[in-house]
Figure: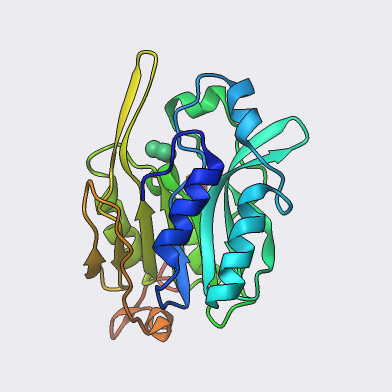
Length: 259
Ligand code: ACM
């Protein structure tokens, strides 16, 4: 999708238009899906950020989730005290906003001037029929995030994104293969300008299966809602060969330098 720049009400209307009439168990929306991405200052960002739950975005999308009987994963700017986190939130099909939120751990470029980096580990949500883990955009460059989710038993990793680097979508395939999980990458499209800054977001959202097959892929410029049927249980088969378990064959004692 293309969020309406700095206009949450309009973005919510646009999301409603995309979602109503779509039949799915789980839909994933991009990072910062109601505000847009390019902010000129922390004050500007804060004026569009919201508490979770209780803000305009989660209130509206909780109603939408309940009415459409669809679980939603959405990216938004989460206000907590004076801090703003680049967060991802699961809203289940009953309209419950699942807490805690996931707060983006790895801030990209000028996000470092705007957001507070995430302050809690990635977590798998088990309330739904399928365990899902959340991550946000630039986390793709840090394989520790999906690995940590896979080790906690995630079948599906929901990756809300505003990707700009041309090779980032490829990482979704690698992350799926190396963890034997499904990856749902929801990336926005469109351009945003503010002062000297102009960013073009690269779309190509995709659902990747645990063998790295791209099951569906969306356009790089147009808004699209795509749905595919998957069997999440396939993510529980961690055998890459009959003798290689992708998690149990790890040699953590040899990787002490990682931590
Ligand atoms: C990004 O992390 N939004 C590129």
